[in-house]
Image (cartoon, rainbow, N blue to C red; front, side, top):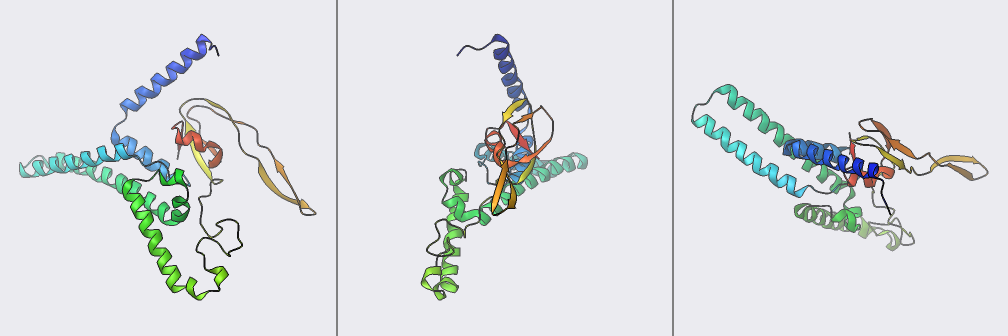
Length: 238
């Protein structure tokens, strides 16, 4: 399909701006963005393996630099500034990893049964999820489930006749989030909302108008309709 020159130039300009913005960001700034995204998203996001490895290497380098400064009696103010930068980076890294572990603990069975989510974990997180689920299963089976009637001994379903895993906590993808984008995004189709019972056991649904997001404008929307844009890096959460 043919593309108008104006559209092509606009797309190229946008991609160039995104690349320049990405290059200008430091790894600590990228970590802060990843931390903020993970903290705001109701589900676990893709683990930033390459970024985390670089940040760990930078932390080690900063620690060695501070040790050299101390050994060589460097200016205390310089040492203090380096130490503040190190503390800030370590806080972001630890908080980012802690938030992900909390999500894994909360949704471990759902994550283990969903290939898309399981593949978002790091190698260590996969081991953690599997170990936690095995320990929890053993604890529940030995302490509680073995004492219940046969039809109620599943840790995933309320009864053996349940069609779904209704005992497994799942992320609330319909939760509202604060977000913005760096460039215009149009025709984001928001899903219909259940407006409740109108009487006689009937319910009605209202279809929301497509959302248009202007650059650098904050929006308060449900997570599910913008999920793919978050995963593609087109929308940032706050």
